Length: 405
Ligand code: PMP
Image (cartoon, rainbow, N blue to C red; front, side, top):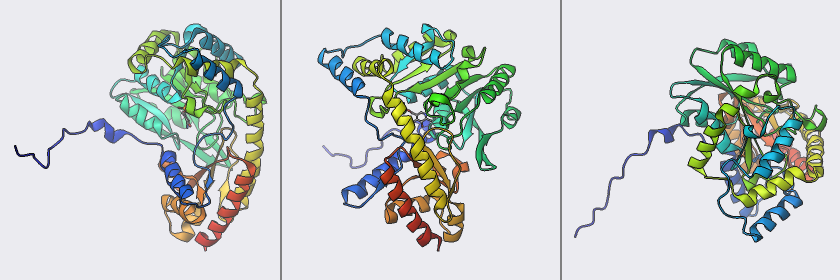
């Protein structure tokens, strides 16, 4: 029998070509390779606080596993966790009830479910540019088309022009994705801006998909509590909130998220969960339950520390010749303007970021990973310890001198 040497395989699905990836993971892999080669690397690439998971969450997760709480469970989430989350979101001023709350395996699937639940093929969805790269992917996977709106640097502050957004609405616009506090700029919507969003959504009858994963990390608000879209009177019924445990509870690897969804879509979200994961692992949910119900000291300490790190790191960045950084109002990213250095060096944003990593040992993400409007910017996460941030500034100063000439 002859064995053919080149067997053709079936063609791949076209939709794969529409998927973005999160560049931060690629930078993290390149940075890790340098770590392994024994090089000094300051890791400012991933959106992940350096705080451990709350110890009471870890203990509850372990206890649950030891008790074999590791079987299928309710698709919408453990009733205890949903009840605890209900208390949490009500604390944010959201007039939710239990059948507004679903638990998911992290925020990312919740984002995908939100688009699958609201968008038909051919529909348009407004997304921020600059913004989280998974938004256009999720829109396209649902068969929709993204239309971008700007998050702009004006008078030294990141701003969103809601009048301009409203002008870009067409009869095919089905939803808007808002992200406040925003990755990667830190822009944080005020209550008035959330109300403006609400009026627009009602007038044009569109869904609001509000990614609030960084809520609780807004530095101008008591307890970091940035306004929620679903707290705007009347908006809960047309709003899907995406949230989770990754950021303010520092539990990225647990892959635990949740959503606040309109009651009219609750059963549909449950159906989406059943079709995808069946349920979120119960021992993971037990950890989450302990995180929500237990002491919030860790959350307060995290926020306080991020606040201090923000002030220190952004001041440092602004002292680097050729770099400027607007103070982020929330989240934990310093989106840094390096256009002056690109001009002097003739490098592209990506080349610049790559040389920062390979030659100077500072890992950040090129702004272009977050859309075309990120050209000329590099994102550094400041969710890392102050001595590392200080060392990062030293290395960036060296890089600016050598690359900027
Ligand atoms: N939304 C935004 C804006 C994010 O930055 C991230 C994480 N980088 C997520 C959603 C996803 O969070 P999770 O870890 O819960 O999937």
